[in-house]
Length: 413
Ligand SMILES: Nc1ncnc2c1ncn2[C@@H]1O[C@H](COP(=O)(O)OP(=O)(O)OP(=O)(O)O)[C@@H](O)[C@H]1O
Ligand SMILES: [Mg+2]
Image 1: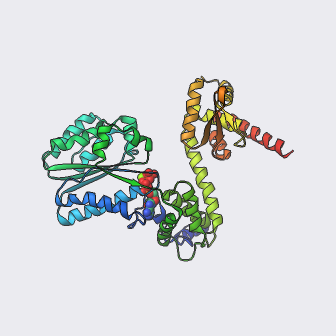
Image 2: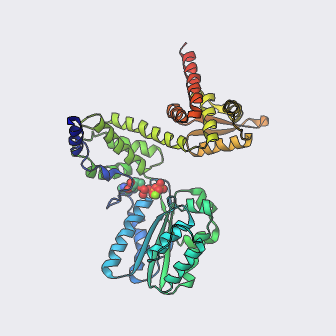
Image 3: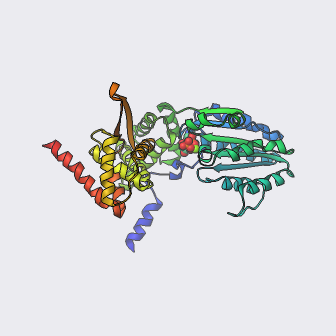
């Protein structure tokens, strides 16, 4: 019993954190440094809602972790506060369409914002839309619909629902809809249907990546809310900022590094967070990312990755699609399952590259054609651990370990 008390006692007083939640990804800070221009444009565009006019639709593009979601949530929250003090009828709705990943769910959220009750299933999406329009026609007010990570919706389900929503104003009189679309996918921007693009992009705001100095400022601001005074070594924030800046200026990444560094220090019973904790945090985060990706791969994705791991000897060499395919076939034969074609394996290699777990580079070899070289982009250890979680793949995982160890031993000879 005593030890339980000790655990609970030690939890109540963290020597490191004052308020750890201030570093969590979904916390929206009151101030966003280095986003003054973007916030101003957003606010100016949406502010006309306060005098009953429809704001222009806004299309927001920027790489991951550049503050798009935080900025839009901050501005729409302030806008709704203002609307209620002024007695303006504003209906804001924020939908992350990666989480609410069908047109039905998106339409339900929108319809429920004006007080309709939509069952979980059982209706056609077009029926939900019809009910929404029928009620909207009888209302007065402005609806601001934020569709975050909008590429997920369109990629999976086409742009039908988006198109309908963009056109809805034509049928409405006293109720007006404006749409804020957010994405970090450049290919989405390039492939968007021109008619959707022109109406969604009445205003376009681009969020550029942060540089190391800006990340430094962002982290300092958040650190003062989250950490106790004096627990951060001077080089901790600059190091987190520099590491994240190297990877395209992702503030989420920088904040994660800082938070996990603090958690590691706390776990280890240290009173100060140092650069050593940051380096450990980096490894832990990378490991978690790899584990997450590998776990969700389908069977043949796992096998192709296993083949890449084997043929690169755990990441020390490069390999080719042909070699990977041959090894993959051996694995499939051993498991006694049906194999996929060379073409499909080649496609899976491309997908693993997109997920960032391997790297490929195509090199032209003159009249011998082109060769695609494949490398592992991460440490092999978490890959093997995750493969071993699946009982049918455990044997393969152990085998991989042997292949890699053998190559290590032959090196040291
Ligand atoms: N200028 C800033 N000041 C303070 N915190 C920031 C700033 N920009 C981003 N952040 C924080 O960084 C994290 C990532 O930001 P956000 O979620 O808004 O990124 P995003 O652009 O929406 O990325 P994604 O495209 O991956 O969704 C959040 O925790 C956010 O609060
Ligand atoms: Mg976001």
